[in-house]
Length: 257
Image (cartoon, rainbow, N blue to C red; front, side):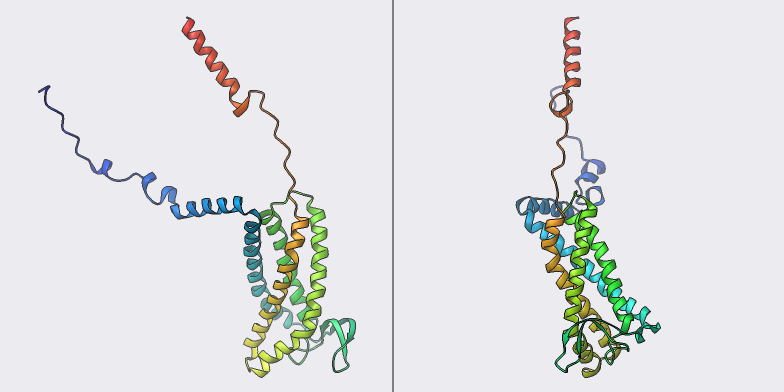
């Protein structure tokens, strides 16, 4: 009958179930990650300097973990060669308390802790640092500081800073390397485990030194210059003014006909 009200359709399984777009896993990604991205973007806009330091901190720690993994590996490889028995002691800059020369790079022949690790130890440290710093250069330049200035100029000043840090770290090793290895290997009786821990302590000290020295240097060498302004669109704002004008003209022509 025409006067009766039609009954509401009974919900089916298809209409009752939420669609894929309505589920928490929209597009296969949890909404939580989207919220984190939005939250981080908002934080970076409000505190760009602090956000930049956070990214620098995270990447630096990642490079430090890489160093901790590489150092024992290279040390083991070079330790199987005769380079352990090749002394590398250069740049005497004074005397130790016992009257012996204090070398800036002091790697006496022989295994640790009796010797200084020889040329094998020196190469293990320097190869590890070189690999880590090359990765760090590109990561910090492209991710943290998003620099678009001359890469060769930045690489030159980065190399200068790296050399300065290498000399500073070598000078510090002259004070702590022998006591740390002797403490962990002999005094505490940790043997090879103590030697590995001492390797990690060495890398951590290098990493901390690099962290605090490099950040202000990066602020200078990894500049971001303003991008050239885009040419204005002749079609007008939004780049669609021309097509919109054609559509409007066509509509008016149709009405007149």
